[in-house]
Amino acid sequence: MWQVGVWEPEEPVSPLLVELAEGAGCLIRACCAPHPTWNTPLDLLVVAPHGPRAVCLPRCRAALVPGDVAPPQCSAPPPIWVSYGCASRNTLTLSSLTAHSAAVAVQREFPHLGGGIVERQELVLPYSGPAPLPFLAQVGTALLLGLLP
Image (cartoon, rainbow, N blue to C red; front, top):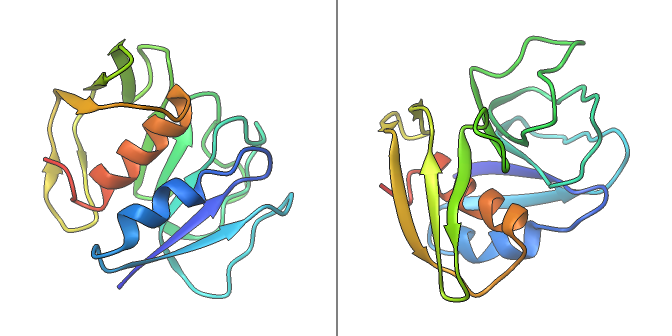
């Protein structure tokens, strides 16, 4: 069972991720504290949009972070570091967005937790909200868990 920590100090995204967890064999653990801690090792840490800029992350195998969050200074970054946001330097970005669909661009390949590789691609997905950054966090989580191609 995957252990997924969601650090959401300002904007909750864990309700969006709970739907992914059902049937995916993962447990979502949310934390809104200024300095997140979990009593169990995490496979994936998801940092919600608008989280703190300077991050000292708990130990995890993979981190999905907003593009303006720098790698941690107080410990080694996790082996898998995926950023999401509107800038082309981010791993995951939106290339187009309409009321009913979103095109998510995977700018660089990265490994997912199951051992495979998420390759550079553009995924056209149904979209009816939430806001773009929480949506990218949801898609990034699905990719890192191996739930999307």
